[in-house]
Image 1 (cartoon, rainbow, N blue to C red):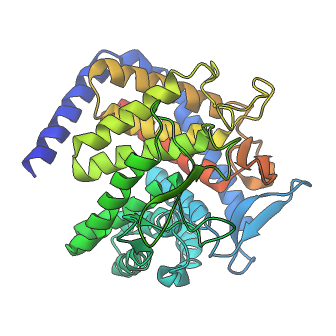
Image 2 (cartoon, one colour):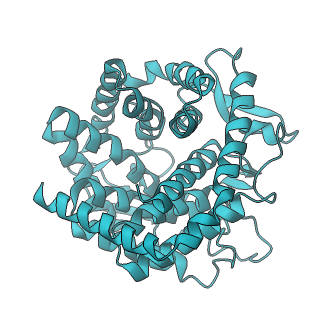
Length: 400
């Protein structure tokens, strides 16, 4: 507890010193409110659009630019309700809250779903934000049930939560994305005092740190294990360009995940890993000047290659939190990059016109390039982390 208080006090002091010398930054940030206003208007149009689509939630668009939805069991199902909760947090719009509650409720049955590792994405982005902002006991119960269901995918021999079911030649696949689902387990530990949730999250983060990262601190997408022994069977990719490439959203998931694990544990090894991943991304010669990464850092078609707005949004959000755990020089660098990313994402190049883009906020995301799925398209998770990053930036410059 003392360690956590010291870190928080140091973070606040660093923020105060940084902001005190940067009043001109605050004055010139009207674009943040404009971007959030656009996000609210577009998201309300989406909410009204799907109101009559029973049980459905936004996913992306198809080749005719028409809205594609999913059921509650799809891994992206919690992002749109989560986006609405974030927008409600910003302006307390009652219509936004009405729809946030309605679409969060569409995920209710997933609290018992033991067939997916993505319950953190699905339930913590939706019910987690709902509980944080409303304090309703019913949301708390859902989250504890979901954490219990997620915990059942843990294998003590592997020391990880299983991502996908065995398929092809894969036995016990674990993907870097799974770092994002640990936050709900850490929340469950703090809420219930049940150490099993914390132990699983730490075990998974530690084993991922050992086996998912290369010497240059880039990450494999997939590490497969033999479930009987915990030995590594394969390292490679499913969504990246090649087994040895650095899939950009995978790097973003890793960065965000280890920043979060440092926040939750105050273990310095997680902070060190977050800084190392950040250095890989920010120092990479193929990171464009506008800081919106190509879908894979090693795609041979760069610079004639698709960008991934969702990866940029996740990176920006992670860097804005990492700022608060960094010395002044690093904080200024991370803030500068995140601000650049958000300004570019907020431009007409990446932000959709009202009523267009299937009612999603951002354009030009890349879901799964090798599978030809959701390529150069809007993505619900891109919107979520974009809005989260805007709010983090807004709070940062205000000194919250």
